[in-house]
Each structure stands twice: as C-alpha cells, then as structure tokens.
Image (cartoon, rainbow, N blue to C red):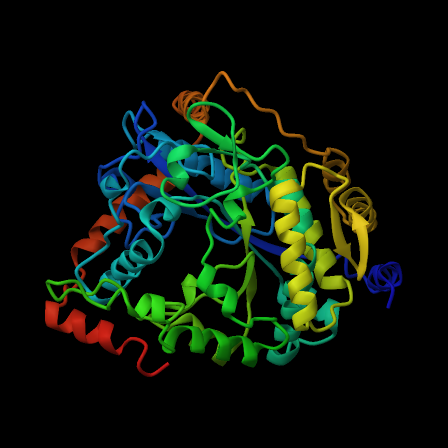
Length: 496
C-alpha cells in the first residue's frame, strides 16, 4: 500500500488522534578535568552507586557517566527530566566537566583510562569483565566514544490501532519491519544527527585512516557526518561477518547466539584469562554477550531480575527498539534537543507505517554502502546513494524522505512536529583551523557547567535521594567469592 493511502487509513481509524509513543533516553558523557583530560577518579559517590542507581551509572570507563531516563509519553517531561539530571550531575562532580562531543578529547595515554568497576558479586564482575574484554579487543580509546540511545515503542493500545493485534508474533513482526526500514534510511539519520567530522589525532594513534589534516592536532573529513560511525569509530570489523537481516526474530536470535558461542580466531588468540587467572573476556566469540552487538538499531525488552537479553526476547518478544547511531549534539546541554526527539519520532513512525519487505544479502550490501557514503561524504548533497532501488543524489533522496515525514507530521496532534521539520535545515560543516577540537570541547564543557551551577529553580531532590538510596542498597549486596565468580563467568554462556 502506498504510504499516503496508509496514512489516510490510519487517520480515518483514529490512530493519530489516540497515538501514545513511549520514549526513553540513555546518554553517555565523559567526565574530564578543566584541561580536558579524561578523569582518572572513580565514579563520584555523590552520584550514587553505579551498580544500583537506575538513573546514573557508568558505561565502559569509570569516567563515562551514563544517564538513563524512565519511559515518558510526553516529550517535555522527558526533556525536563534529562535536563534536571544534567543539573544534578554537574553540581556533584566538583570541578570536573562533562565532555560535549561524541569523539573523546585528546588521549595521551589510554592505559590511564580506568575500566568501570561495579561490585564483587557475580553480576558486578560480569559487567567489569565484559568491559575488560572490550578493551582487549578494541582498545580503550574506541570505547570512550559517547552517544545517545533513543528507546522507542508504541503503547499497547496504539500498537493494536496500528496492526489490529497485540499478539507477541505480530508485535515482533511489526518492530522488525520498523528495524529493517530504519536501516534502509539510516543514511538520513546520519545526515541529520551526525556531529563528528573532526577528531583529535590521538584518537587514531597507531591505526590506519583516510582522514585529512586540519591542523597540528586534528584530523577531519570535509564532508563527513559521523566519523563516530565510521571504521575508526564505534565499530567491530569482526561483526561484519554476522548475517543479520532482521527478517524474523528466531533467525536474529540464532545469529546472536552463534556470535556468542562460536569461537572467533582473533579473539580466541587473546585468551579468556590473564596470567593471574582472572577473566579478561567472557567468551571468545565475535560477541562476548548480547550487548556487544554494534548496530544502529536493536530489538529490546527490559529484563526482569538476572534474565539475559536473548532469553527475554525469545520468551516474551520485542517490547521496544533502541536507536543507537546518534551523535551527541555538542551545543545542546543534554546532547539532544526536543526537536531532535520529534524528528526521531517521525522517522520511527515512518519506519512503522511504510511497507517493509524482507532484506536480502544484496540489499544489505547496498544499505552498508549508503551508510559509508553518507558517513564520509554526507555533507555533499550530490553524493549518490541507492534509494528505493534507484540511484539518487542525497539531495533528492532527502527531499523525498522529508515529504513523507511531513505527511506524518501533519497528522500529529502536537503541531510542534511540523515546526521541528521546518527547522530541520541542511547541515554544513565549518572548521576553525586556529582552534583545536580539544580546546573547543573544553570551552563548551565549561560554559555548560557554569550554566548548570546556576539553576536553583531546577529541583534535584529526587536524584539526591535516589543516589543515597543506591548507596544503601549497594552496602547490603552479598559479595561472592573469587571461586564463585569464576564459576559463574565460566558457565555464563554454557547454556545459551
């Protein structure tokens, strides 16, 4: 069915009138010193325990703060919550700053980057060893890349309005349709959300790259959108051999399982343990665990207790999608604006509504080529991509997508969606050769920090209490012995 007819049909049945979108955001930021150096300090106790605080944790490094919001139906409430979390964090990290870019600052010695620690129990050590494995496989520098994860779903009633069903199988199929379409137009997301065309030279120290020299300290690509998503960024070459098409949940889960349990020679050569007998990676597969799958979007469902993602998806089905390929917006204190959230809503609704045939190997290759073209050259609108099986300029393909998003925006109750689209200007890269990437990041970070310290009207008492409660919860955790932890790690993937 043509998109316009489908939109009209959904309008006639009241889908847009009653639409409820569920959204959450996860946002990573590095703590840095006033000179822009990645912090060597532990996660501040004033932010609570990184293991038991559901709102503020750490990602790869002790210095990498990860903010996690609850699910919201209202964009203003989501943004206000995210903003207030930033106020609270900035007021509880002393004289340190939150780095505003996705690409990390200058890293003179990556050995000084401290891998995140959690607790001396099975689950805490699983998280830590997983990160040790990432460091061994990819190096610490790559793991310090930050970004936004945008979690999106429809309410159960809205899903029923869309597909006439709430069965697990139909919901799974619908979210997989969305995922396939999102991968088809990820080039568009890269062009609108890409914010990483410059890097400090230390980011690629000892690694091959095709970047150009901007000045004494920095490299760049003149028309790049997101070097973070390029081969020098948050990527795993090993995962390119995985045959994931998202055509059905069972085949996705089987490919995920094989990626974990089948040894991969390069990672097998690293060994599972250090010389002292402690684990340095959880498995020697392409993936240690499910979370290591790097893609621009993933099917998800929150786990209850210690259930692992594979089992949760297999037993209960997909609950939401996690959009991962979004750079931090460096001139937004929260890393993302309200209008950007609206654009993501429209993109994901388009991906839900548009017809979504199965992806074959040939199309997957063209999807990957499109992404690479836009990652490296997306600011040049004459760049050619394959759009709906035909070669098109980025300019023409973008115009077509914008028209489709406009058709959806016109049906939304909130007219801010139409305003957000009108404000979506074609991006251009500007470069200041006289000021380094590192210096620019420090300036922005200091400005953001200063603003956050002068907002007494923002109530952060909920986060203060949450931090205190998380420390109390951490204090009563039962620690496991080294033998118990090693047995747990050894058996973790055995019964997958």
